[in-house]
Image (tube, rainbow, N blue to C red; front, side):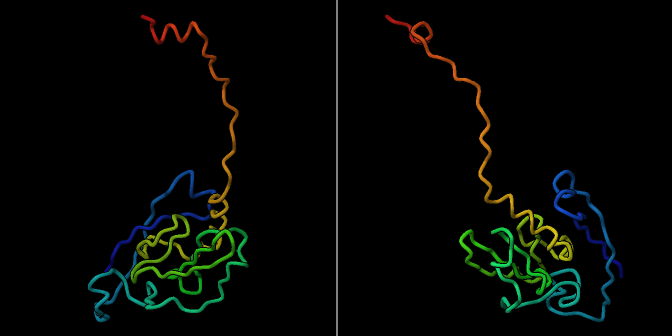
Length: 156
């Protein structure tokens, strides 16, 4: 039995922002491997996507990251993700079964939309989160003169 899934195809953060190209891949799921999750989600639990009940201990540490932000945990096949606060604190979360953390969009998305293997290359997207906006010089403000005020607010 063939099933068609669509995922977003990107190779690095520079390719991601200008254009998102849709592609597809074929996945075969044997009918003899039926489980309760297969009744809800496409694919095989534990094979096509991870099935975790708690956030496991992994080798991910916020102090090893270049930027604060959101990070997919590669050790959990992207089902777990971490938020690294600007002051170095770490909070860990788990995406629901059937989903994985999309490093490209900072959300839990269906497993067939996520390219977990590219997540580390997209960690640098976090650099954009805490940047101070660049101040653009504004045009000089119009000067409000007595004449302008009289034209706006008519005296009676």
